[in-house]
Length: 72
Image (cartoon, rainbow, N blue to C red; front, side):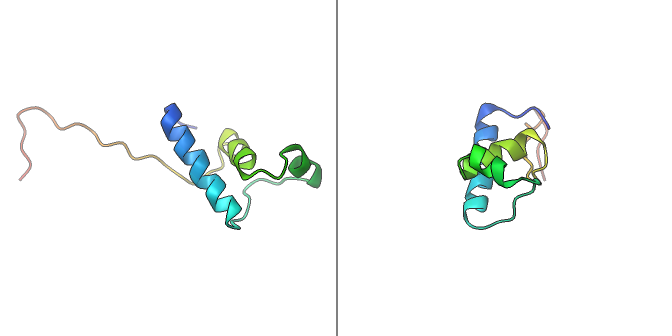
């Protein structure tokens, strides 16, 4: 897991929770009792996937341009 800002983390978990709520497969092996513990909440499931670092999502951060260098 990379060092994400709290805003990036919120965006990743929110996007994944939306995917789960729309029927995407869950990337962790969970038992029925785990679902009960999570209250069948997609956000809680997405948080656990984020903590286990199994999400195939990445963040692209634009790098600043060097001063005095122009793009052609």
